[in-house]
Image (cartoon, rainbow, N blue to C red):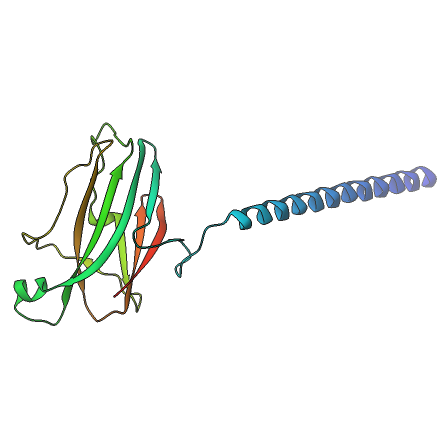
Length: 187
């Protein structure tokens, strides 16, 4: 009886060792595959900006591929205005205009005939990482296109309140799924 129990224990130990050996080989194979995939993506990797997002340049188009089609957004610049002083009669703050271009490749949905660019497509950070708020009092010199239909291009601008001086602005492209890319605009 003791011999049978001893034999069963030895067999169980052998099976456990074989099982652990296979697991180790699978783990090594998986980690080699992960290393290969990482090496392949790092050679194809795009530039990463200061906030960890895809970095693009001023004037470079970012293509957005969405469920209902594609469109391109391009930040063309940021300029300071006197709008805060005109509205509030003081110069404690100022307003900057984010200028952009949009090209609708083929985006259309049941809710919209095309692309409507609004301030929530962008998040603007000053050089101290403060987030700028939209300036909700519009003046006549704001270029705001309507809905850009498939095959059309348009340009426009969106005003934001600047609380303090800034050497540059990080303009972050946002979507429902999160932030996707950024462009640094020097002042």
